[in-house]
Image 1 (tube, rainbow, N blue to C red):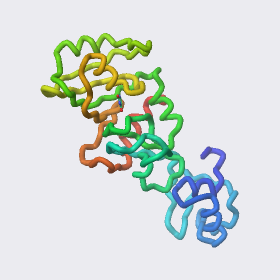
Image 2 (cartoon, protein in one colour):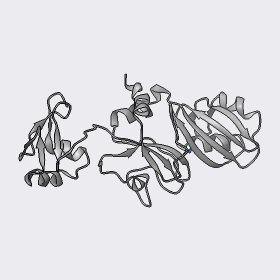
Image 3 (cartoon, helix red, strand yellow):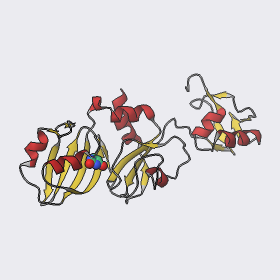
Image 4 (cartoon, rainbow, N blue to C red):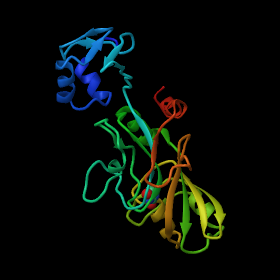
Length: 237
Ligand code: URA
């Protein structure tokens, strides 16, 4: 896109300056300049990598995609819309195409990537890549040593659903961590039910090499660092 140039109104809308109509108004009102010259046509093709674009004399920082780490609280759903609060209600950003990369149950907390990078999300969620997801689990009943081998062998449910092998690390009398390479509906809860126990709480702490920032309280989010983004984007290579 950047090679052939990009429509000025599209670039400004993608950079958080409002809807296409909002940015057309900015342009019409003479607030937008390209390489020091005020421009009036919204469909002008610009190259954000080599041209200096300013709005109200402030340089526009163009980023094609945006990446945020949310510490999802219990009680909101991992969707862009629905009945009740969604994870996007917690994200106060001007970018319009953000969505949660994957789903956590309504009562699950922890790491959720919020992005508008469709190709990257597709790869992260693709079973082809076996992207690791790690969760902290609290159980109703004590953790039994036999679980480790049972989960490591994978499980087939009565309805035919197959859960791939998962790694368990006991962390307390009724607590463990689990590392999965897939993300089927209610997977962890269903595996523990099949083992005769029950999940009391679930919190995701890692996806691939992206670790939950423990300084984020439930409901808080922050932008990914360049290093974190690069770690995830390595999948696309
Ligand atoms: N497994 C579950 O059961 N729930 C989640 O939210 C994630 C994995």
